[in-house]
Amino acid sequence: MASILALSEAFGLSTTTGTLAMMLGLAVGIDYALFVVSRYREERAEGRTPQEATALATGTAGSAVVFTGLTVVIALAGLSVVGIPMLTKMGLAAAGAVVVAVLIALTLVPALLGCRPNAVLGRKARKSGRIEESPQDNGGIRWSRFVLRRPVPVLVLGVIGLGALAVPMTGLQLGMPGDEAKPTSTTARRAYDALAEGFGPGFNGPLTIVVDAKGTADPKAAAETVAKEIGATKGIVSVSPARFNEAGDTAVFSAEPATAPTDEKTKDLVTVIRDERPGIESDTGATFEITGTTALNIDISGKVQSALVPYLLVVVGLAVILLMVVFRSLLVPLKAAVGFLLSVLASLGVVVLVFQQGHGAEILGVNQTGPIMSLMPIFLVGIVFGLAMDYEVFLVSRMREAYIHGDTRVLILTTFEIDEYVAQALRAGASGFLGKDVTADVLLDGIRAVAAGDTLLSPTATRTLITRFLAAPAPGSRLATPERLTTLTTREREVMALVADGLSNDEIAEKLYVSPLTVRTHVHRAMTKLGARDRAQLVVMAYQSGLAQVLPPQRAGP
Image (cartoon, rainbow, N blue to C red):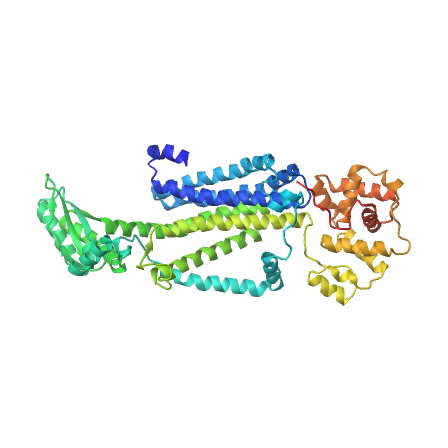
């Protein structure tokens, strides 16, 4: 805001420019800071130190913040496509505020977390020194399970619902509301109604005609002919006498329409007069222009409406390219673009439904319905686009990270089946099926499948599986001895623990920033030193030795 105020005089920035920049900067700034802090709390709940949690939050959530900030900047800077200088200034100023919000989220927020690591934790966590995980069965979890159980019906219903809300958008009428849109309790509104009732609705919005008669033999006669031709146009009630400048070659007169300034018939009337202008100018030799508040509002509305589609194409196209770079996918950007377009059209449809057609207007306290403010659709597109892309990148980046690192709760059995009871339990997302009588041999098959990366089990299911096996080991299975464990290097222990978590060699390599060949070498050396015949036994030894914890790990204090 300080920069905008300092540059306002030099660049002619209005107070509205600062207001928009402050509004968007505050909105995205809160979003970005909360995203980083939320990830920091999550990492602390996983038992990491404040320094580690801050670094991970900044490296993961911070990257998403950068890309979301870029999408918002694209949307706001894209306002220059409209071709209205005021909008260009407002968009660039707001984009600058978003850049500042991104920089704060990447620098100031981590610094504050480093200075006061426990300030963002709950009161109970600060007092007890223990950080509790968030509830695993909250409303968001229940909703996601509902959606995942019925993805197609939810998708179809969502698209149909948004499509239905977007239908009224086809009747969108743009304008610049004046005194007629003010509450009836104001003197301006009462004066407007009194003038419209006494002199006609067009009295509040006359058209101003400027005639340039330079070069004509009789400027006065030319101006009178122009006024006469315009006065004869259907929809014009009266024409005022022409007034000339001192040189006598330029005249100005007013034409009063029969309809209100924001009426669509007035817009059509201006279009008709402009279409007839070439013929009138050829007959008189004089040129004329239609101006005034009413004509100016009509021109602005037309320009904004014609620029809406190009603006959408520019910002959506650039966002799709950016998302393709971020996620290295074509489906994710296309899905995001389609979802954004549906959101924008549905939002515009609701605006038309309430503020133009009047459905539910009384509930919101709207006194007068009519055309939508000309600049509103452009602002709505920019703001909705920025926020939609924000949440898209936040959610998808977190999903992608969880998928890459194997942190998933999706339970898929691909290479073995214990029995139908287990299969049903897995499909339902449960891990307590191991309470049923299952032989150690079958459990070892399950461990082998986890170790090979052929099945995805939640950490809870994996720990329960190992617990059951350790209680009744299969014949011929081996357990690691303390003497052999001391021969393992630190990296071999780390790799062994990740193997026990069910990660593949490629996933371990990405997590440790090494090559898959290096991971295979560490796995082979660990198996050789411990005498494990295969990865399945290596998994069992990791849990039996404590390198991988069977029970949920205790959360570290602050």
